[in-house]
Length: 213
Image (cartoon, rainbow, N blue to C red):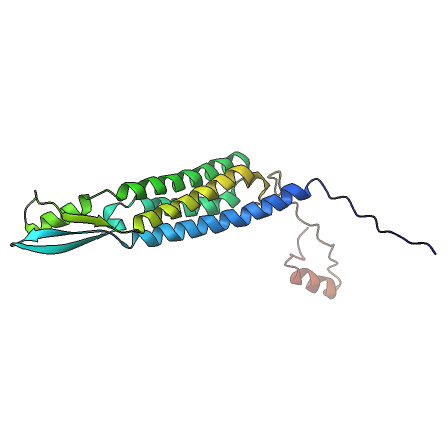
């Protein structure tokens, strides 16, 4: 009795890059979208708090992230747009957009960390509350939200680095052009016999002009 052993098919050399491309694509999309959402959410929260001396009493003051600095929110939006644009461009364009995504993440991290020690927003509010332009905030303290925004920027940075490393293996948006950039050739239409009504109706169903050449 003869035994037939199955011979495994050799894996294609392109399987490895394709798998790594899919994994890196999913990870970049997750990091980019989550990072932008976290950074935007963090800038809407309370970053700093303190008090101002008004009429002999302490007046509580708070400042949101958007009051302290608008840079993290702006860069998060830029990074999100760059993440989408990665799939609309190819070659050098994809490289540039990936670099923009990474820089947006790095800028978000830097701006968020600089906001930890920024007291200008509360100083301005203290001056308004006291009616004295030289007044400053007392008892300044910060919450953890600036660090949360920095984490969001770090995720955007990771997405950009993944795009720079593996972006060449990612798919691009398909349009009416082939890979070489040339327009797709139109399908040849079947000849229509004007003496045959059924041919005319079929041409109309296909969206063709039965009277054309």
